[in-house]
Amino acid sequence: MPKSVSKNTRSTSARANSRRPASAKSKPAAGRRTTHTAQRSAPAPRWSWQSLSPERKLDVAGVALAIAGLLTLLSLLSGQHGILTQWWVDTLYQLT
Image (tube, rainbow, N blue to C red):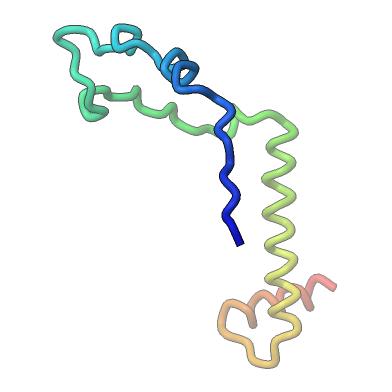
């Protein structure tokens, strides 16, 4: 069975024209280092609870409550209780 030869639709002159000329490439400015170690970023701003929007605060509270609920469910279903889980289960029973 003969192999089919695929034709290249672009000519070599079209490829040569699509390349950038060497002078168009960007060069670093004289006296400037190109390594990333020389460029130091500003320190990250400190995080504060007051900088969060009310919607984001509700998101954080919801995630915390979901984690607490999951841990509560696991501790209630567990057959053996450690010190922390026994305290948590006893506190929940006292509240109910």
